[in-house]
Image: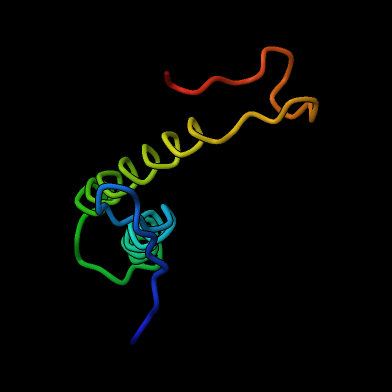
Length: 89
C-alpha cells in the first residue's frame, strides 16, 4: 500500500503534516482492537484490548484539542458563542 502525505516546509527547516495524518491511524488501530473484542475475534480479555486502545486515543484527542486551540477566530460568524475563543499567547 502506498499513500502520499502532504508535507509543508516551515521556516527553520521543520516539516509539517496535516494532523489527521497522525490521528486517523491512531484511531483506526484503536477501533480495530475494540471491534475484535465485540466481534469475538480475539482470545484476549476486554481489559487487555481496551487499555492500548485508550492509550492510542489519548494523544489523538490531545492533538485535536491543540489544533482547535490554534484555529483562527472568525469575527461575526456567531459559531463560538458570546465570548468567542482564544488562542494561546
